Length: 345
Ligand SMILES: Nc1ncnc2c1ncn2[C@@H]1O[C@H](COP(=O)(O)OP(=O)(O)OP(=O)(O)O)[C@@H](O)[C@H]1O
Ligand SMILES: [Mg+2]
Image (cartoon, rainbow, N blue to C red; front, side, top):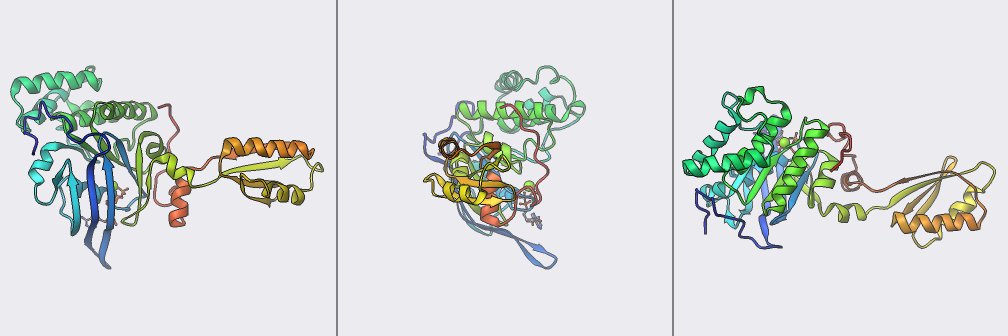
């Protein structure tokens, strides 16, 4: 039932579609100045095995609290948490052997070299010396640690340190890897590199659960996302599903004098793919269910009516629209740092 400490041969047991993590009715509060702080107010979720799963939410949403409970570092007030088939409350030690955890501040010994850190970590998990040495070599290659792994970790750049920490989290071949804000403060290149490493881990069968407050990270890296706010999951699904619930917005600026805005807006509003068309200053704003087919229909109609167009802009829905709809606030204004530059994945 439980993985052995020297988990050299363990691979994930959960077959495709099975949940690697199941959370039901999770609650946690902390003592605070003006009464108790309800960090988690009844969280339910299910993380499919072999996927990258993102917890997206603003500062104070409860992401770290949830992660600490899932990784046995903190006890829940109420609720059930099953990780890799084991109840976290009743089998914390067995859960710990099946998971890896990369905390927000990381756990590397900065006075030891990268290689020494890896070997020490393997030994702490009860792996044999030779096996640990082999595993360290393997991880040094897989996570591109070779150029710096013989130096002490104090001298590493942020990205190098992060890569070492991920390697430390997976020395013992965990079924589930948890990472708290893994790319916080990384430059775009290091961020892209880490995304790559996490995808490779996922492709090799590890379930990866990470917290983030970067919209693009949740959107492009995660197979599924739970949007968390004030201790509750406000939306859950694949990024495509979540975005697909909201319309794409097209703004059309007709050439001055070439159209009666009100008449054109009314016409557009009757198109089947148009949810709504309204006048906004000198422009017409059209909400579409589908950007691609909807745009074609709009242009056909404008051409048929002889409306000359000066400019068109399209904004496809983002996870921020989902957050905005569910909470009334934008994630960008709700305590998230400014979005980082979009980077190639
Ligand atoms: N040990 C604690 N004692 C008191 N309050 C706490 C403690 N840990 C967390 N909290 C509170 O619980 C709430 C959730 O915090 P948590 O750290 O889980 O948020 P988060 O989503 O990880 O935020 P961030 O994005 O800033 O890391 C916050 O209001 C926080 O102040
Ligand atoms: Mg946090």
